[in-house]
Figure (tube, rainbow, N blue to C red):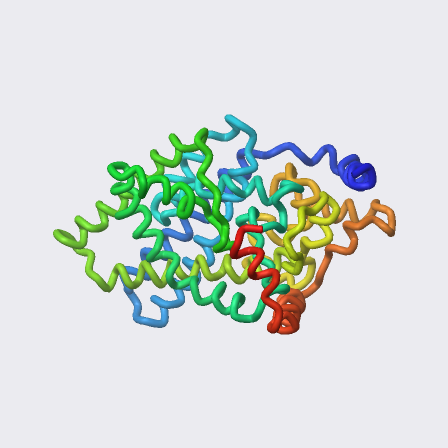
Amino acid sequence: MPDDRAAVRQAQVLVDDLFDRKPGLYWLDFTLSTSLAWALAAVYFIDPAGPLVQWGAMLLAAIAFFRTGTFIHEIVHFRSGEMKGFKWAWNLLVGYPLLMPWVLYRNHVEHHSHLHFGTPEDGEYLPLAAMPPSETVKYLVQVPLLPLLAVLRFGVLGPLSHVSPKLREWLLVRASAAITNPYYRKRFPGHHERELVRSEWFCFAWLAGLALLTAFGPMTGIHWLMAWALLATAIGLNWLRTLAAHGYGHAGDPRSHLAQLDDSINLTGQTWLTAWFFPVGLRYHALHHLLPGLPYHRLGVAHRRLLADLPADHPYRRSNHDNYFTVVGRLLRGSWSSRGDATVLRRWQTGG
């Protein structure tokens, strides 16, 4: 732990002036990204120029929604009471319509805890590199189901749970967290339940409005299928991006701060790919784990300063990788080598 603190302090003193958040930049980036996403979605649904333009618009809309959706990560790192208007705007324009209000991601703080990171109690860590390949396949094939599950959760189960305490408790434990670890089981914290309930009713109202437009207005079943395709594509981009956030090879023991850094990844190459595949600072995931308080618009500057001034033996230097495909290839090789050993999988299935 003393070594951990010293290494973190070495980095922090070099970037102490970069922790200020620029609200104007957040609003500008969010407004442009969200406006572009909805404009492209309109082209996709209206189809004014034929299928080539329509499906091109769908892909670009998915990328834009993916970008503006990743502001959820910044939101959960806001200090208490910080940028409340931004949180409301993000929910109203992105979170509620896409059925992913920011409160579902409040469990992200556990991902930075030395008690939870890399354990079955971490909703964002699934050790695919130490599990049989079938787990990686399951991780990927579930993506098309996620929009359907979101509709079920907010359109049916959420309202019903308010008249069924048993169902309510099940939802709070099993279906109220944005996770990639399907074995995560933890009750939603009571101090956030008011925000969750408000979000549930906003999401239900959105779905009810769409249902009325389908029953009495211009929407048809085809539009629902198109919406599913758009949302599944946006979610799929994030699912694929997440494969290169960590090494995902640990067996489930708690990790110190530096041990978290050793398992986290910065992607510093493939500029054309990382520009849209790792938006809002996500390419600097190792830096984010080293110094979680840095806002996304400061990460690039901080990274360059750390590489210029940190000692040659500082562990941060080991976290940088040039190629997304190399990182994912390493994960797949680890999974293949674990194909006959289900020890880690059983640990996740049993919760530790």
